[in-house]
Length: 164
Image 1: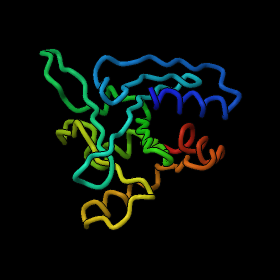
Image 2: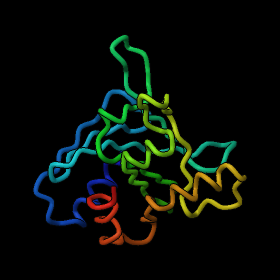
Image 3: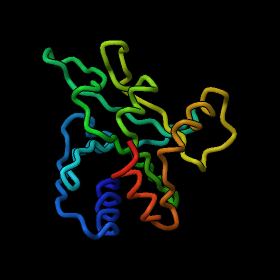
Image 4: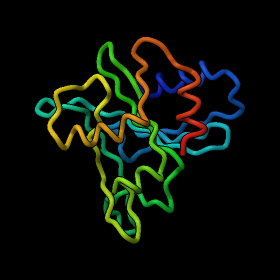
C-alpha cells in the first residue's frame, strides 16, 4: 500500500512518536482506507486517485449505517483529522483536513447537512483549473503539504498535531 509506506516514512521522520497504531479498514479498501492512532490522536487516511477526464484527484470516504447503507462520515463520530495522500509518479503530498474544516465545507454529515461520500482534491501542482476547482483548491491548500522533494517536518507537525 503506497499510502501506508508514505505514512510510515513520515512517522520515522517525526522520530519521537510514543504510540503509532495503523489498521487497514475494510470499507474504502480501493482507496487504501486506514485507521491510525498517533500519540493518542485518531486519524483516518485515504489515497486519492488520478482520474483520466478531470483535473485533480478523487477520493471516496464513507461508512455503513446500521442498515448497511453507505453514508457520509458524521461529524460526531469522525476522528479529528482525515489524511488524504496523493501519490502520482514523482509527485506526492498530503492533505491533513481537520474535521472542523470538513464540516465547514459540507463534507461531514451533521444535523444541518447531508455531507459527502467523496471529494476531489487539488494539490498545489495542479494548475489551469475551472472556477469551481479553483475555489476548492483555495480552501484545500491550507491543509496541504507537498512531499515530492523533502519532508518539511515543522509544517507536517503543525498539520498533524496542531492545526484544528
